[in-house]
Structure formats: structure tokens, C-alpha cells
View 1 (cartoon, helix red, strand yellow):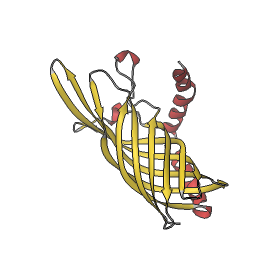
View 2: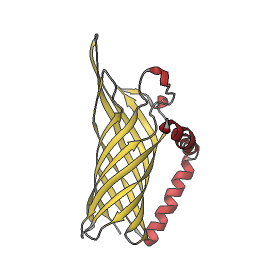
View 3: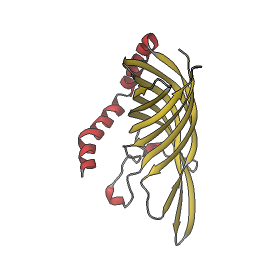
View 4: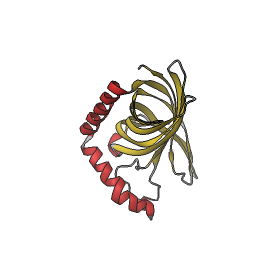
Amino acid sequence: MLYLFISILIVQPLLNFIIMKKRVLLIAFVAMANVALAQGHYGIIAGPNFATIGPEQSGFSFSEKVGFYGGVWADYPLCHHFDIEPELLYSGEGYKVTSTSSLGTYSSSTSENYLNIPILARYNCHSGFYGVAGPQVGLLLSANSGGVDVKSSYTSAEISGVIGVGYISPYNVGVQLKYNYGFTGLEKDYMSTSGFPDYKNRVIQFGVFYKVK
């Protein structure tokens, strides 16, 4: 009941705004990045995705689909130990599913490609370790299932929560591990009476990054 209340009053209106204002969102990211370029740091990051969807459904077995993500990041110091870290990432996501019934077993694979824009709060430790957390907006670039274009049946933007940890060495090379938990259902015209859950993305990301400045 609480989730439904939050979805109706907060998540859905925000998602509708994002869908209509994609260009504004990108401009806002560029503005934040420009501030970071002048007074903070920036770099590049890339690595594998381990993606699936949830929740589980009786008769269906979901497994991880391995993809690639990469892009640019910036960070701007807010106060002692705390930064804000916007990122602009291409992210190859999706899932594999196997269904079992009296007719036999069927397997398929779905690929989803997103332009993800996380805006993260970052807490830095003196040892080089840090933690990040914050919201992420994902703009759907394409979706394919079994060789068929299914983008039109997916929501064009999603909201996720991101949490992660990382380490940066004295040589400006580092690693980062993040978990993205989707709050927005994948299906554009989802109906609760369909008998299926409102599936959402679940993604683990492991990245290697380099701080340019």
C-alpha cells in the first residue's frame, strides 16, 4: 500500500516529467559537469554489467545477462569528505528467462540499452575508499527480444536507486562496484490484472575508471 502511494504521488509524476523533458535533463547534466570541470574532477569509466529483472514469478526462472557499460563521470566537492558525482553512461542491460510448463521448456534473451544519468552523493575516506548513493534516470535507447524490436512496449524512461563502493589509487586509477535497483516497471502498458508482476531492472556494475583531472 505504501509503495502504491509513493508510486502515484512521487515516482509516476516525476517519470512523466522526465519523459517530456529529456533535453532539459541532458542540459542539466552538462551544466553540473561544467562546474565539476572548473572546480572538481572528471574521468572515464567502463566495465561489465550483470543484469536481470525482478521480482521472481512462478514457472519462470530469470538469470543474469552480461553486458557492457561505460561513459564519463565528474565530481564536485560540497564539503569535508562529501562530493556530488554526476555520471553519463551507456548501459547494456536485459535478462535471460526460462519458462517451464506442460508444453515443455522455453528460453529467451532480452537486451535493453540505456543512457543512464546517475546523480550520486559521494563520501570519501582518507584511505582512498569511498561510498556512493543516489537516484538514477535511465533513457531507453533500444530493446530487443529474440531478434524482435520491442522498444515500443517498454517505458521510455526509468528511475532507479544506486548504491555502491569504490577505491581510487594514488595513480588516479580505481575500481567501483554499484547496484542499481529499478523503481519503474519495464512494461509501458502494465496491468495488474495480467497475472504477472510489474518487472523492474536489477543491475550489478563493476567498473574500472581513470581520473583525468
